[in-house]
Length: 220
Length: 382
Image 1: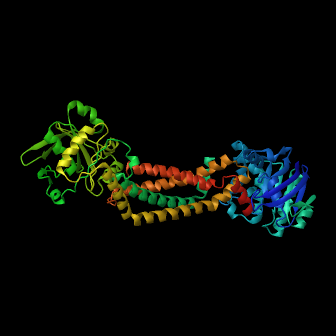
Image 2: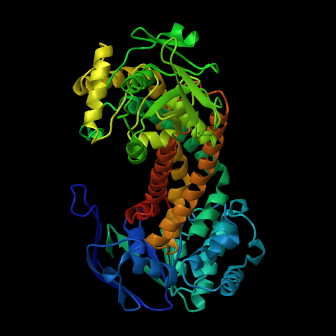
Image 3: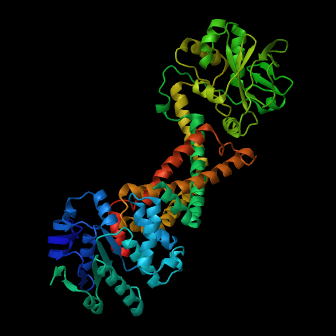
Protein backbone atom coordinates (compact mmCIF):
# COMPACT_ATOMS: atom_id res chain seq x y z
CA UNK A 1 0.00 0.00 0.00
CA UNK A 2 1.13 3.52 -0.74
CA UNK A 3 0.30 6.22 1.79
CA UNK A 4 1.15 9.86 1.23
CA UNK A 5 0.42 12.38 3.95
CA UNK A 6 0.77 16.15 3.84
CA UNK A 7 3.55 15.89 1.31
CA UNK A 8 5.21 19.02 -0.06
CA UNK A 9 7.87 19.11 -2.68
CA UNK A 10 9.84 22.19 -3.62
CA UNK A 11 12.59 22.16 -6.21
CA UNK A 12 15.72 24.12 -5.24
CA UNK A 13 14.37 24.22 -1.74
CA UNK A 14 15.82 27.07 0.30
CA UNK A 15 17.29 28.90 -2.67
CA UNK A 16 16.11 32.02 -4.49
CA UNK A 17 14.72 30.14 -7.45
CA UNK A 18 12.77 27.68 -5.31
CA UNK A 19 9.71 26.28 -7.00
CA UNK A 20 7.02 24.33 -5.18
CA UNK A 21 5.73 21.49 -7.33
CA UNK A 22 3.47 19.67 -4.86
CA UNK A 23 1.27 21.13 -2.13
CA UNK A 24 0.04 19.15 0.83
CA UNK A 25 -0.60 15.91 -1.03
CA UNK A 26 -2.65 13.26 0.75
CA UNK A 27 -3.18 10.03 -1.08
CA UNK A 28 -3.66 6.35 -0.38
CA UNK A 29 -3.34 3.65 -3.02
CA UNK A 30 -4.24 0.16 -1.94
CA UNK A 31 -2.55 -3.02 -3.10
CA UNK A 32 -3.70 -4.27 -6.46
CA UNK A 33 -5.17 -0.97 -7.64
CA UNK A 34 -4.87 0.33 -11.18
CA UNK A 35 -4.64 4.08 -10.80
CA UNK A 36 -4.30 6.82 -13.36
CA UNK A 37 -2.83 10.15 -12.32
CA UNK A 38 -3.79 12.76 -14.82
CA UNK A 39 -3.07 16.40 -15.19
CA UNK A 40 -1.70 18.99 -17.57
CA UNK A 41 1.94 19.32 -18.34
CA UNK A 42 3.71 20.85 -15.31
CA UNK A 43 0.88 19.94 -12.92
CA UNK A 44 3.21 17.88 -10.76
CA UNK A 45 2.20 14.36 -11.72
CA UNK A 46 5.70 13.23 -12.73
CA UNK A 47 7.08 14.75 -9.55
CA UNK A 48 4.61 12.70 -7.56
CA UNK A 49 5.60 9.57 -9.45
CA UNK A 50 9.29 10.29 -8.82
CA UNK A 51 8.58 10.59 -5.11
CA UNK A 52 6.58 7.36 -4.99
CA UNK A 53 9.36 5.75 -7.05
CA UNK A 54 12.01 6.70 -4.49
CA UNK A 55 13.77 8.75 -7.13
CA UNK A 56 13.21 12.17 -5.63
CA UNK A 57 13.11 13.49 -2.09
CA UNK A 58 10.66 15.93 -0.46
CA UNK A 59 10.97 18.48 2.28
CA UNK A 60 7.92 17.70 4.37
CA UNK A 61 5.20 15.14 4.86
CA UNK A 62 5.58 11.43 4.44
CA UNK A 63 5.40 8.76 1.80
CA UNK A 64 5.26 5.14 2.89
CA UNK A 65 5.46 2.03 0.76
CA UNK A 66 4.09 -1.05 2.51
CA UNK A 67 4.46 0.76 5.81
CA UNK A 68 8.05 1.87 5.31
CA UNK A 69 8.61 5.64 5.24
CA UNK A 70 10.86 6.73 2.41
CA UNK A 71 11.94 9.91 4.17
CA UNK A 72 13.77 7.92 6.83
CA UNK A 73 15.80 5.92 4.36
CA UNK A 74 19.41 6.35 3.30
CA UNK A 75 20.36 6.63 -0.38
CA UNK A 76 21.44 3.01 -0.33
CA UNK A 77 18.14 1.86 1.13
CA UNK A 78 16.23 3.92 -1.43
CA UNK A 79 18.24 2.23 -4.19
CA UNK A 80 17.15 -1.08 -2.68
CA UNK A 81 13.51 0.05 -2.79
CA UNK A 82 13.83 1.04 -6.45
CA UNK A 83 15.44 -2.28 -7.17
CA UNK A 84 13.09 -4.62 -5.33
CA UNK A 85 9.77 -2.94 -4.64
CA UNK A 86 9.23 -0.71 -7.64
CA UNK A 87 9.30 -1.14 -11.39
CA UNK A 88 9.41 2.08 -13.37
CA UNK A 89 8.42 2.55 -17.00
CA UNK A 90 9.19 5.85 -18.67
CA UNK A 91 8.04 7.57 -21.82
CA UNK A 92 11.44 7.33 -23.53
CA UNK A 93 11.82 3.68 -22.45
CA UNK A 94 15.09 4.39 -20.57
CA UNK A 95 16.86 1.47 -22.17
CA UNK A 96 20.54 1.08 -22.98
CA UNK A 97 20.42 0.98 -26.74
CA UNK A 98 23.59 -1.03 -27.31
CA UNK A 99 22.58 -3.78 -24.93
CA UNK A 100 20.44 -6.71 -25.97
CA UNK A 101 16.88 -7.09 -24.78
CA UNK A 102 17.99 -9.77 -22.34
CA UNK A 103 20.74 -7.58 -20.91
CA UNK A 104 18.38 -4.65 -20.48
CA UNK A 105 15.70 -6.71 -18.80
CA UNK A 106 18.27 -8.31 -16.49
CA UNK A 107 19.75 -4.98 -15.34
CA UNK A 108 17.84 -4.76 -12.01
CA UNK A 109 18.96 -8.31 -11.19
CA UNK A 110 22.59 -7.21 -11.47
CA UNK A 111 22.15 -5.04 -8.43
CA UNK A 112 20.63 -7.59 -6.10
CA UNK A 113 21.96 -10.87 -4.85
CA UNK A 114 20.68 -13.45 -7.24
CA UNK A 115 22.10 -16.68 -8.61
CA UNK A 116 22.99 -17.07 -12.29
CA UNK A 117 20.37 -19.76 -12.88
CA UNK A 118 17.65 -17.60 -11.32
CA UNK A 119 18.79 -14.66 -13.41
CA UNK A 120 18.14 -16.46 -16.69
CA UNK A 121 14.81 -17.83 -15.51
CA UNK A 122 13.58 -14.47 -14.26
CA UNK A 123 14.55 -12.70 -17.48
CA UNK A 124 12.84 -15.39 -19.54
CA UNK A 125 9.67 -15.20 -17.41
CA UNK A 126 9.56 -11.41 -17.70
CA UNK A 127 9.95 -11.53 -21.47
CA UNK A 128 7.23 -14.13 -21.72
CA UNK A 129 4.96 -12.01 -19.55
CA UNK A 130 5.23 -9.11 -22.00
CA UNK A 131 5.01 -11.38 -25.04
CA UNK A 132 8.46 -10.93 -26.58
CA UNK A 133 10.56 -13.97 -25.61
CA UNK A 134 11.80 -14.28 -29.19
CA UNK A 135 13.51 -10.90 -29.01
CA UNK A 136 15.78 -11.83 -26.11
CA UNK A 137 19.02 -11.66 -28.04
CA UNK A 138 18.20 -8.67 -30.20
CA UNK A 139 19.86 -5.33 -29.61
CA UNK A 140 17.41 -2.76 -28.36
CA UNK A 141 18.34 -0.25 -31.06
CA UNK A 142 16.88 -2.61 -33.65
CA UNK A 143 13.42 -2.72 -32.04
CA UNK A 144 10.27 -0.71 -32.73
CA UNK A 145 8.87 1.74 -30.18
CA UNK A 146 6.22 -0.67 -29.00
CA UNK A 147 8.74 -3.47 -28.60
CA UNK A 148 11.05 -1.16 -26.66
CA UNK A 149 8.26 -0.28 -24.26
CA UNK A 150 7.54 -3.96 -23.73
CA UNK A 151 11.24 -4.46 -22.92
CA UNK A 152 10.98 -1.59 -20.44
CA UNK A 153 7.93 -3.22 -18.84
CA UNK A 154 9.70 -6.57 -18.73
CA UNK A 155 12.58 -4.86 -16.93
CA UNK A 156 10.11 -3.23 -14.55
CA UNK A 157 8.63 -6.58 -13.52
CA UNK A 158 11.72 -8.78 -13.66
CA UNK A 159 12.42 -8.43 -9.95
CA UNK A 160 8.78 -9.05 -9.10
CA UNK A 161 8.06 -5.63 -7.57
CA UNK A 162 4.90 -4.71 -5.68
CA UNK A 163 4.37 -1.48 -7.59
CA UNK A 164 4.66 -0.58 -11.25
CA UNK A 165 4.90 3.10 -12.01
CA UNK A 166 4.46 4.15 -15.62
CA UNK A 167 5.14 7.74 -16.63
CA UNK A 168 3.40 8.49 -19.95
CA UNK A 169 4.08 4.94 -21.15
CA UNK A 170 2.32 5.55 -24.45
CA UNK A 171 3.65 9.04 -25.03
CA UNK A 172 6.13 7.97 -27.70
CA UNK A 173 3.89 5.40 -29.36
CA UNK A 174 1.13 5.43 -31.95
CA UNK A 175 -2.43 4.89 -30.75
CA UNK A 176 -2.66 1.21 -31.60
CA UNK A 177 0.67 0.32 -30.06
CA UNK A 178 -0.18 2.46 -27.06
CA UNK A 179 -3.37 0.56 -26.53
CA UNK A 180 -1.41 -2.69 -26.54
CA UNK A 181 0.89 -1.33 -23.84
CA UNK A 182 -2.02 -0.20 -21.67
CA UNK A 183 -3.61 -3.61 -22.10
CA UNK A 184 -0.36 -5.21 -20.97
CA UNK A 185 -0.28 -3.01 -17.87
CA UNK A 186 -3.87 -3.97 -17.15
CA UNK A 187 -2.93 -7.63 -17.41
CA UNK A 188 -0.10 -7.14 -14.93
CA UNK A 189 -2.56 -5.40 -12.62
CA UNK A 190 -4.98 -8.29 -12.94
CA UNK A 191 -2.23 -10.55 -11.60
CA UNK A 192 -2.18 -8.56 -8.38
CA UNK A 193 0.35 -5.83 -8.98
CA UNK A 194 -0.38 -2.24 -8.09
CA UNK A 195 -0.06 -0.17 -11.26
CA UNK A 196 0.07 3.62 -11.36
CA UNK A 197 -0.07 5.27 -14.76
CA UNK A 198 0.79 8.92 -15.25
CA UNK A 199 -0.92 10.30 -18.31
CA UNK A 200 -2.55 13.35 -19.79
CA UNK A 201 -4.65 11.15 -22.07
CA UNK A 202 -8.18 11.03 -20.70
CA UNK A 203 -9.02 7.88 -22.65
CA UNK A 204 -6.21 5.98 -20.96
CA UNK A 205 -7.15 7.39 -17.57
CA UNK A 206 -10.74 6.31 -17.99
CA UNK A 207 -9.65 2.76 -18.68
CA UNK A 208 -8.14 2.63 -15.18
CA UNK A 209 -10.16 1.69 -12.11
CA UNK A 210 -9.34 4.93 -10.34
CA UNK A 211 -8.39 8.38 -11.52
CA UNK A 212 -6.54 11.04 -9.58
CA UNK A 213 -6.41 14.53 -11.03
CA UNK A 214 -3.57 16.91 -10.23
CA UNK A 215 -3.70 20.60 -10.94
CA UNK A 216 -0.96 23.06 -10.05
CA UNK A 217 0.57 20.64 -7.60
CA UNK A 218 -2.65 19.82 -5.79
CA UNK A 219 -4.97 16.85 -5.94
CA UNK A 220 -8.43 17.99 -6.98
CA UNK B 1 30.39 -4.03 -10.75
CA UNK B 2 33.80 -3.67 -12.36
CA UNK B 3 32.72 -6.53 -14.61
CA UNK B 4 29.58 -4.66 -15.58
CA UNK B 5 31.80 -1.62 -16.18
CA UNK B 6 33.99 -3.72 -18.47
CA UNK B 7 30.88 -4.83 -20.30
CA UNK B 8 29.87 -1.17 -20.57
CA UNK B 9 33.34 -0.42 -21.95
CA UNK B 10 33.07 -3.13 -24.59
CA UNK B 11 29.54 -2.21 -25.57
CA UNK B 12 30.69 1.33 -26.31
CA UNK B 13 34.02 0.26 -27.71
CA UNK B 14 34.04 2.65 -30.66
CA UNK B 15 33.41 5.70 -28.55
CA UNK B 16 35.74 4.43 -25.87
CA UNK B 17 38.53 3.90 -28.37
CA UNK B 18 38.03 7.45 -29.53
CA UNK B 19 38.29 8.61 -25.94
CA UNK B 20 41.38 6.44 -25.41
CA UNK B 21 43.08 8.00 -28.44
CA UNK B 22 42.18 11.46 -27.17
CA UNK B 23 43.62 10.56 -23.80
CA UNK B 24 46.79 9.30 -25.46
CA UNK B 25 47.25 12.57 -27.28
CA UNK B 26 46.51 14.32 -24.03
CA UNK B 27 49.08 12.21 -22.21
CA UNK B 28 51.68 12.83 -24.89
CA UNK B 29 51.09 16.56 -24.75
CA UNK B 30 51.23 16.55 -21.00
CA UNK B 31 54.40 14.48 -20.90
CA UNK B 32 55.95 16.72 -23.49
CA UNK B 33 55.15 19.89 -21.61
CA UNK B 34 56.18 18.43 -18.28
CA UNK B 35 59.34 16.96 -19.80
CA UNK B 36 60.39 20.32 -21.17
CA UNK B 37 59.84 21.97 -17.83
CA UNK B 38 61.21 19.00 -15.89
CA UNK B 39 64.29 18.84 -18.06
CA UNK B 40 65.11 22.47 -17.50
CA UNK B 41 64.24 22.15 -13.86
CA UNK B 42 66.66 19.29 -13.46
CA UNK B 43 69.38 21.22 -15.13
CA UNK B 44 69.09 24.24 -12.95
CA UNK B 45 66.84 23.41 -10.03
CA UNK B 46 65.92 27.05 -9.96
CA UNK B 47 64.21 27.30 -6.63
CA UNK B 48 65.90 26.89 -3.34
CA UNK B 49 63.22 24.80 -1.66
CA UNK B 50 64.58 21.84 -3.55
CA UNK B 51 68.05 22.63 -2.32
CA UNK B 52 67.35 22.78 1.35
CA UNK B 53 70.62 21.13 2.23
CA UNK B 54 73.32 23.16 3.83
CA UNK B 55 76.98 23.15 3.00
CA UNK B 56 76.65 22.93 -0.73
CA UNK B 57 79.12 24.67 -2.92
CA UNK B 58 78.52 25.48 -6.51
CA UNK B 59 80.89 26.34 -9.23
CA UNK B 60 80.28 27.45 -12.70
CA UNK B 61 83.08 26.85 -15.07
CA UNK B 62 83.62 28.30 -18.48
CA UNK B 63 82.67 26.63 -21.68
CA UNK B 64 85.36 24.38 -22.94
CA UNK B 65 86.91 25.08 -26.23
CA UNK B 66 85.12 23.20 -28.96
CA UNK B 67 88.18 23.20 -31.16
CA UNK B 68 90.10 21.49 -28.45
CA UNK B 69 87.44 18.85 -28.25
CA UNK B 70 87.77 18.30 -31.95
CA UNK B 71 91.48 17.82 -31.46
CA UNK B 72 90.90 15.63 -28.48
CA UNK B 73 92.87 18.04 -26.36
CA UNK B 74 91.69 20.31 -23.66
CA UNK B 75 93.21 23.46 -22.40
CA UNK B 76 92.79 24.48 -18.88
CA UNK B 77 94.85 27.35 -17.56
CA UNK B 78 97.72 26.55 -19.82
CA UNK B 79 97.74 22.88 -18.92
CA UNK B 80 97.03 20.55 -21.78
CA UNK B 81 95.00 17.44 -21.25
CA UNK B 82 94.78 14.85 -23.89
CA UNK B 83 92.09 12.30 -24.26
CA UNK B 84 93.08 8.72 -24.80
CA UNK B 85 93.32 7.32 -28.24
CA UNK B 86 89.73 6.14 -28.28
CA UNK B 87 88.72 9.73 -28.55
CA UNK B 88 87.40 9.91 -25.06
CA UNK B 89 87.27 13.28 -23.55
CA UNK B 90 86.81 14.69 -20.16
CA UNK B 91 85.08 17.89 -19.49
CA UNK B 92 86.70 20.82 -17.88
CA UNK B 93 85.28 20.39 -14.38
CA UNK B 94 86.32 16.79 -14.42
CA UNK B 95 89.79 17.72 -15.48
CA UNK B 96 89.73 20.43 -12.93
CA UNK B 97 89.06 17.93 -10.20
CA UNK B 98 91.49 15.52 -11.67
CA UNK B 99 94.23 18.06 -11.89
CA UNK B 100 93.60 19.18 -8.38
CA UNK B 101 93.77 15.62 -7.15
CA UNK B 102 96.80 14.90 -9.22
CA UNK B 103 98.73 17.86 -7.95
CA UNK B 104 97.80 17.41 -4.35
CA UNK B 105 98.35 13.71 -4.46
CA UNK B 106 96.45 13.35 -1.27
CA UNK B 107 92.96 12.49 -2.20
CA UNK B 108 90.34 14.33 -0.25
CA UNK B 109 87.39 14.75 -2.53
CA UNK B 110 84.79 12.05 -2.22
CA UNK B 111 81.30 11.43 -3.33
CA UNK B 112 78.20 9.59 -2.49
CA UNK B 113 78.01 6.03 -1.34
CA UNK B 114 81.71 5.44 -1.80
CA UNK B 115 82.58 7.88 0.90
CA UNK B 116 83.34 5.22 3.48
CA UNK B 117 85.50 2.98 1.42
CA UNK B 118 87.17 5.89 -0.23
CA UNK B 119 88.13 7.41 3.09
CA UNK B 120 89.57 4.18 4.33
CA UNK B 121 91.64 3.58 1.28
CA UNK B 122 92.60 7.18 0.98
CA UNK B 123 91.33 7.12 -2.51
CA UNK B 124 89.78 9.93 -4.45
CA UNK B 125 86.86 9.30 -6.67
CA UNK B 126 86.74 11.55 -9.65
CA UNK B 127 83.92 11.91 -12.03
CA UNK B 128 84.79 11.62 -15.65
CA UNK B 129 81.86 12.66 -17.71
CA UNK B 130 81.22 12.52 -21.39
CA UNK B 131 82.62 9.16 -22.28
CA UNK B 132 81.15 7.63 -25.38
CA UNK B 133 79.01 4.59 -24.88
CA UNK B 134 80.71 1.24 -25.37
CA UNK B 135 84.13 2.83 -25.31
CA UNK B 136 85.41 0.89 -22.37
CA UNK B 137 85.11 -2.54 -20.91
CA UNK B 138 86.10 -3.74 -17.48
CA UNK B 139 89.86 -4.10 -17.34
CA UNK B 140 90.56 -1.34 -19.84
CA UNK B 141 93.00 1.28 -18.73
CA UNK B 142 92.25 4.95 -19.06
CA UNK B 143 95.25 7.12 -19.60
CA UNK B 144 95.21 10.84 -19.15
CA UNK B 145 97.92 13.26 -20.03
CA UNK B 146 98.34 15.76 -17.30
CA UNK B 147 101.00 17.59 -19.21
CA UNK B 148 103.15 16.74 -22.14
CA UNK B 149 105.09 14.12 -20.29
CA UNK B 150 103.05 12.99 -17.33
CA UNK B 151 100.23 10.53 -17.54
CA UNK B 152 97.86 9.01 -15.05
CA UNK B 153 96.27 5.62 -15.56
CA UNK B 154 93.02 4.27 -14.23
CA UNK B 155 91.68 0.80 -14.61
CA UNK B 156 88.05 0.36 -15.43
CA UNK B 157 86.49 -1.83 -12.79
CA UNK B 158 82.91 -1.48 -13.87
CA UNK B 159 80.95 -0.35 -16.86
CA UNK B 160 77.45 0.86 -16.93
CA UNK B 161 75.63 -0.93 -19.70
CA UNK B 162 72.30 0.42 -20.79
CA UNK B 163 69.80 -2.22 -19.84
CA UNK B 164 66.79 -0.81 -21.51
CA UNK B 165 65.61 2.00 -23.63
CA UNK B 166 64.63 3.74 -20.46
CA UNK B 167 68.12 3.85 -19.06
CA UNK B 168 69.51 4.65 -22.44
CA UNK B 169 67.12 7.53 -22.79
CA UNK B 170 67.87 8.64 -19.28
CA UNK B 171 71.46 8.98 -20.24
CA UNK B 172 70.57 10.70 -23.42
CA UNK B 173 68.39 12.98 -21.41
CA UNK B 174 71.23 13.82 -19.12
CA UNK B 175 73.66 14.46 -21.90
CA UNK B 176 71.13 16.24 -24.06
CA UNK B 177 72.33 16.45 -27.62
CA UNK B 178 75.79 15.17 -26.96
CA UNK B 179 76.67 11.68 -27.89
CA UNK B 180 77.92 10.81 -24.45
CA UNK B 181 76.16 8.40 -22.29
CA UNK B 182 78.25 7.25 -19.41
CA UNK B 183 79.40 8.57 -16.13
CA UNK B 184 82.57 7.25 -14.61
CA UNK B 185 83.71 7.70 -11.09
CA UNK B 186 87.44 7.45 -11.11
CA UNK B 187 89.45 6.53 -8.06
CA UNK B 188 92.79 8.12 -7.90
CA UNK B 189 94.49 4.96 -6.73
CA UNK B 190 94.17 3.56 -10.20
CA UNK B 191 90.65 2.40 -9.93
CA UNK B 192 87.66 3.41 -11.88
CA UNK B 193 84.18 3.09 -10.50
CA UNK B 194 81.31 3.26 -12.86
CA UNK B 195 78.42 5.21 -11.58
CA UNK B 196 74.84 4.83 -12.58
CA UNK B 197 73.50 8.25 -13.38
CA UNK B 198 70.52 7.89 -11.09
CA UNK B 199 72.72 6.69 -8.26
CA UNK B 200 74.98 9.63 -8.85
CA UNK B 201 72.06 12.00 -8.72
CA UNK B 202 70.74 10.36 -5.59
CA UNK B 203 74.09 10.88 -4.01
CA UNK B 204 74.04 14.49 -4.86
CA UNK B 205 76.71 14.05 -7.44
CA UNK B 206 76.00 16.35 -10.28
CA UNK B 207 78.52 17.04 -12.90
CA UNK B 208 76.20 18.03 -15.63
CA UNK B 209 77.35 18.29 -19.15
CA UNK B 210 76.22 21.44 -20.83
CA UNK B 211 76.76 25.14 -20.62
CA UNK B 212 76.64 25.10 -16.85
CA UNK B 213 78.62 22.32 -15.33
CA UNK B 214 78.05 22.11 -11.66
CA UNK B 215 79.98 20.25 -9.03
CA UNK B 216 78.19 19.60 -5.79
CA UNK B 217 79.66 18.47 -2.53
CA UNK B 218 77.73 16.57 0.03
CA UNK B 219 77.14 17.80 3.52
CA UNK B 220 79.93 17.14 5.94
CA UNK B 221 82.68 17.63 3.42
CA UNK B 222 82.85 21.34 3.54
CA UNK B 223 86.56 21.40 4.21
CA UNK B 224 87.33 19.37 1.17
CA UNK B 225 84.96 21.45 -0.79
CA UNK B 226 86.58 24.63 0.39
CA UNK B 227 89.93 23.24 -0.55
CA UNK B 228 88.62 22.48 -3.95
CA UNK B 229 86.99 25.83 -4.06
CA UNK B 230 90.25 27.59 -3.45
CA UNK B 231 91.87 25.57 -6.13
CA UNK B 232 89.19 26.43 -8.60
CA UNK B 233 89.22 30.05 -7.53
CA UNK B 234 92.89 30.21 -8.29
CA UNK B 235 92.33 28.73 -11.65
CA UNK B 236 89.31 30.49 -12.93
CA UNK B 237 87.47 33.73 -12.70
CA UNK B 238 84.10 32.15 -13.16
CA UNK B 239 83.47 30.65 -9.76
CA UNK B 240 80.35 32.11 -8.32
CA UNK B 241 78.72 32.16 -4.95
CA UNK B 242 75.83 29.93 -4.05
CA UNK B 243 73.42 32.85 -4.12
CA UNK B 244 74.71 33.95 -7.49
CA UNK B 245 74.48 30.43 -8.74
CA UNK B 246 70.88 30.09 -7.68
CA UNK B 247 69.96 33.41 -9.21
CA UNK B 248 71.73 32.37 -12.35
CA UNK B 249 69.89 29.07 -12.37
CA UNK B 250 66.56 30.78 -12.01
CA UNK B 251 67.42 33.05 -14.85
CA UNK B 252 68.57 30.20 -17.05
CA UNK B 253 65.52 28.13 -16.18
CA UNK B 254 63.07 30.81 -17.18
CA UNK B 255 65.11 31.79 -20.19
CA UNK B 256 65.23 28.25 -21.47
CA UNK B 257 61.59 27.53 -20.69
CA UNK B 258 60.67 30.70 -22.56
CA UNK B 259 62.35 29.30 -25.66
CA UNK B 260 59.93 26.39 -25.50
CA UNK B 261 56.85 28.59 -25.27
CA UNK B 262 55.50 27.62 -28.73
CA UNK B 263 55.85 23.93 -27.88
CA UNK B 264 54.32 24.39 -24.45
CA UNK B 265 51.49 26.45 -25.92
CA UNK B 266 50.70 23.77 -28.50
CA UNK B 267 50.87 21.17 -25.74
CA UNK B 268 48.48 23.10 -23.55
CA UNK B 269 46.05 23.65 -26.45
CA UNK B 270 46.13 19.92 -27.17
CA UNK B 271 45.57 19.18 -23.50
CA UNK B 272 42.53 21.45 -23.39
CA UNK B 273 41.03 20.16 -26.64
CA UNK B 274 41.56 16.51 -25.77
CA UNK B 275 40.33 16.93 -22.22
CA UNK B 276 37.17 18.65 -23.35
CA UNK B 277 36.55 16.22 -26.19
CA UNK B 278 37.10 13.12 -24.08
CA UNK B 279 34.86 14.42 -21.33
CA UNK B 280 32.22 15.36 -23.88
CA UNK B 281 32.28 11.98 -25.59
CA UNK B 282 32.18 10.10 -22.34
CA UNK B 283 29.40 12.20 -20.92
CA UNK B 284 27.38 11.77 -24.07
CA UNK B 285 26.48 8.26 -23.10
CA UNK B 286 27.51 7.83 -19.50
CA UNK B 287 25.04 10.32 -18.02
CA UNK B 288 22.13 8.50 -19.58
CA UNK B 289 23.45 5.09 -18.65
CA UNK B 290 24.02 6.12 -15.06
CA UNK B 291 20.49 7.50 -14.86
CA UNK B 292 19.18 4.15 -16.07
CA UNK B 293 21.30 2.27 -13.53
CA UNK B 294 19.96 4.63 -10.87
CA UNK B 295 16.42 3.99 -12.04
CA UNK B 296 16.70 0.23 -11.74
CA UNK B 297 18.17 0.44 -8.25
CA UNK B 298 21.96 0.60 -8.49
CA UNK B 299 23.31 2.30 -5.40
CA UNK B 300 26.13 4.81 -5.41
CA UNK B 301 28.88 2.25 -4.81
CA UNK B 302 27.58 0.02 -7.57
CA UNK B 303 27.38 2.88 -10.02
CA UNK B 304 30.88 3.99 -9.10
CA UNK B 305 32.11 0.45 -9.70
CA UNK B 306 30.61 0.52 -13.20
CA UNK B 307 32.24 3.89 -13.85
CA UNK B 308 35.59 2.66 -12.71
CA UNK B 309 35.35 -0.50 -14.78
CA UNK B 310 34.61 1.53 -17.87
CA UNK B 311 37.20 4.18 -16.99
CA UNK B 312 39.91 1.63 -16.38
CA UNK B 313 39.22 0.10 -19.77
CA UNK B 314 39.65 3.46 -21.47
CA UNK B 315 42.75 4.38 -19.49
CA UNK B 316 44.21 0.92 -20.09
CA UNK B 317 43.87 1.31 -23.85
CA UNK B 318 45.32 4.79 -23.75
CA UNK B 319 48.28 3.59 -21.66
CA UNK B 320 48.95 0.88 -24.22
CA UNK B 321 48.86 3.40 -27.06
CA UNK B 322 51.17 5.75 -25.19
CA UNK B 323 53.57 3.00 -24.19
CA UNK B 324 53.79 2.02 -27.84
CA UNK B 325 54.32 5.58 -29.03
CA UNK B 326 56.90 6.39 -26.38
CA UNK B 327 58.78 3.18 -26.94
CA UNK B 328 59.04 3.97 -30.64
CA UNK B 329 60.32 7.43 -29.80
CA UNK B 330 62.76 6.06 -27.24
CA UNK B 331 64.10 3.43 -29.62
CA UNK B 332 64.37 5.70 -32.62
CA UNK B 333 66.63 8.60 -33.36
CA UNK B 334 63.62 10.83 -33.58
CA UNK B 335 64.35 12.32 -30.24
CA UNK B 336 67.39 14.45 -30.83
CA UNK B 337 66.64 16.86 -28.06
CA UNK B 338 66.67 14.37 -25.25
CA UNK B 339 63.52 15.97 -23.92
CA UNK B 340 61.06 13.46 -25.21
CA UNK B 341 62.69 10.58 -23.45
CA UNK B 342 61.80 7.92 -21.01
CA UNK B 343 63.63 8.95 -17.92
CA UNK B 344 62.72 7.51 -14.60
CA UNK B 345 61.16 10.83 -13.75
CA UNK B 346 59.12 10.73 -16.94
CA UNK B 347 57.87 7.32 -15.90
CA UNK B 348 56.95 8.71 -12.54
CA UNK B 349 55.22 11.65 -14.15
CA UNK B 350 53.34 9.30 -16.47
CA UNK B 351 52.33 7.07 -13.62
CA UNK B 352 51.13 9.95 -11.53
CA UNK B 353 49.43 11.40 -14.57
CA UNK B 354 47.54 8.22 -15.27
CA UNK B 355 46.55 7.85 -11.66
CA UNK B 356 45.21 11.38 -11.79
CA UNK B 357 43.50 10.62 -15.03
CA UNK B 358 41.84 7.52 -13.67
CA UNK B 359 40.44 9.73 -10.96
CA UNK B 360 39.35 12.30 -13.54
CA UNK B 361 37.73 9.60 -15.65
CA UNK B 362 36.11 8.33 -12.50
CA UNK B 363 34.81 11.80 -11.84
CA UNK B 364 33.65 12.28 -15.41
CA UNK B 365 31.73 9.04 -15.27
CA UNK B 366 31.11 9.47 -11.64
CA UNK B 367 29.73 12.97 -12.09
CA UNK B 368 26.49 11.24 -12.73
CA UNK B 369 27.06 8.94 -9.80
CA UNK B 370 26.41 11.79 -7.44
CA UNK B 371 22.98 11.59 -5.96
CA UNK B 372 21.69 14.64 -7.69
CA UNK B 373 22.79 14.05 -11.26
CA UNK B 374 20.81 10.90 -12.16
CA UNK B 375 17.72 12.46 -10.65
CA UNK B 376 18.22 15.59 -12.72
CA UNK B 377 18.85 13.56 -15.83
CA UNK B 378 15.74 11.49 -15.24
CA UNK B 379 13.65 14.55 -14.57
CA UNK B 380 14.90 16.55 -17.52
CA UNK B 381 15.57 13.96 -20.17
CA UNK B 382 13.45 10.89 -19.58
